[in-house]
Each structure stands twice: as structure tokens, then as C-alpha cells.
Length: 453
Image (cartoon, rainbow, N blue to C red; front, side):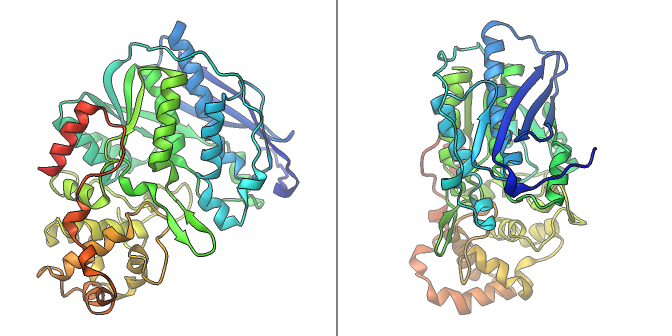
């Protein structure tokens, strides 16, 4: 690659140049640039080509491709976070523009906080284009394209759909061997989407680009929506729980939600836009939306066969940097939370066997667990449950003969529990389903019964 100079503070605009789909190969190209700088090309390849596209199907694919182009641009926009966004091709409708404003502002909330940027004042979208003709039904097949991420949540979704007799294909984006192994372990058909970021982005980072967390679930959702249109599936299903809608409360800042694109606001808005502008019979929802992390952990504890294959440790999925020697690093917030969430529902030897150690008996990890219960710290910028869930799990373990003598449980019982309202720490109360969701009615009835059994 030719040497390029990148000065983030001199950049005034981010440009959505063009997007292309080759239906014969499944190859996608997404093009961007800053001002008049080098062309940045992200490439994806959706397995299953060639795809037959004509009429309403071709129009739906074009609209789904536009959405992917616009949403995936967030990976590049953040490098300089300029004030102006320019759409050189199709212009987003008002509804699409509203979604993009939320993706770029709320989805980059943690990024903005860490980089001390006020995106509300600096991020300007152009006037929206005209409203498109209403999307038509495509006659999509009764089939689920379910995202698998290698962790416990997507495996709970997959096994719940299997128990309900729903036809499904597990889909994943990228080249993670861990996710591939989990997908193969399910024994279900799988769909791989390859994704290659523009190489220039890494050079920009070396030269001082802004960096930080992006709403990757929004990008993955758009990619799977396009794959569903191409492959003829009428449902795209994720595994985002109730607590994903709630962020970390930062003194002087307010709420910052690390996992905003996993929350209900994004799900509801994205699902409505797909039905209105892409395909009237394409449904997008999270099967786990009504449930707490603890309820999902209880369901996972009932499942056999994935203990040696799954991992929720995000260090396994970093593009750059050190990865754990095993599937669990044992020191990150995700490791801490998953261990704590599973402990009330799994036999101790099984859980310790999964992690290779007892994280609740390691005093040096106290600070990490304190953040989970929001004791002397705020909730971590990670995909973890609400503080009340972690507190309820600790309170339950404090009375458990199997766990009550472990170092961090003893510390919770003796130092922290006396400062809390014990009447609010019922584990059973955290297991009840509640809240809004987008699950189809008949399936929702089965899912509720399945979780309460």
C-alpha cells in the first residue's frame, strides 16, 4: 500500500462513495473516503452464490445493500469524526436517516466519551432523500438466519429454536475459529460471511486516528439482513437480552451504553425500517429480549455439549492485540460476569472445569467484580448484565454451601451485603420475563413456556 498521510483534525467530511454487489459471486464492496483522500474499500463475501435477483428481489437487495453501506461506514467515520457526512449515491430516506443518526451518535457513545468528543454538536447529516415506495413481500421462506457469536447466549437461542422445531441456519461473520467450532458443534447448516476492512484504516490508526468501540451488532445485523434477502430467509434472529438496553451511569456524563446496538431501541427501529423499505415479510428480532442475563445463564446450564466449545471472553475476538491462551482469560469483565451468572445454576466442578479456575476464590479480582455490582465503580463498558443481577447472584451464593466460603463471596457477605437492601436481591425475581420484544406471537408463547419450565 502506498504511504498515505492522515491528519484527523484537518478532515472536514466523510463520504459514502458507492456500494456494489456481485450476485454471481456474493462479493460486496463498500466504498468510502475522507474529503478527497484515498478510496477506502471494505469487502464482504456472502456464501451461497450465485443468487437469483430480479424485480422486487433485486430492489430489496439494493436497499439492504444501501443500509449495510451506510451502517458499516461507522467503522471508518470514527477515525476522524468529521462534522459533515456526504452521500454520493442513494440518499437515505427520513426513516433511514433517523436510524443512522442514532447509530452514529448513540452507537458511538462510548467512543465519544473516551475520546472526549461531543458528537451531538459535530455530526451533521444532510437533508434526507424522498421516501421510497413501500417495500413489497418477497415470498421469503419460513426459515431463520440466526447469528452465532460463540458465547452462551446465541447457543441458548439456537437450542430454543431447535426445541421449537424452527428451521434455522447459523450465520457468522469473520474468520474466528472459535465461532466456527461452535457453529459446527450445533450440527446445523451454517452460513459464513467473510469481512475484510480497508487496509488503510489500520494505517490511519498508526497515524493517530480516533479509535474505540463501534456498534458492531448494527453492522452484523445489516449484513445478515442482506444475506437473508439473497438467501430467501424471512427471519434474522439475534440473542440480545433485556439488560442490553441499559448502559453505564457516568458521573457528570449520564448513561453511556457500550452495547447500544444490542438494545431494544435499535432492534425496534431497525426491524421497522427493514419491513418498510427492504422487504415487508423480513422480520428482525432478538429471541432473548424479554429475559435477564441470569435467566439466560439458567437456560444454558441445562444444555449439554458446549462446555468445551463456547466462550464469551471478548479477547478471543479482538482484531489486534493479545488473545487468551485458553478460551477464557479470567481477568476481563465478561469472564467475571459469565462465571458469576452461571455459578447459581451449575454444579461447581462443572463451572470450574469450564474456566480452568475458580474466579470467585481469587481475591485479586475483587475490583473487577465490584464494577459488576456497581460498588465503588460504574458498570464496565462490556456486554454484562445489570448490577442488580450480579448482586442477586452474589447474595444467592453467599447462602450456598458450595460457594459461601470462597474469598470474594465471603467479602461480599461480610463487607458489601450489609450495605444493601437484601429484600431486593431475590434471584427468583431476576428470572421473570418482562419488557417489550419483537418475537412473533406464536413463537413467543413457546419461548416463555420453555424458559419457565
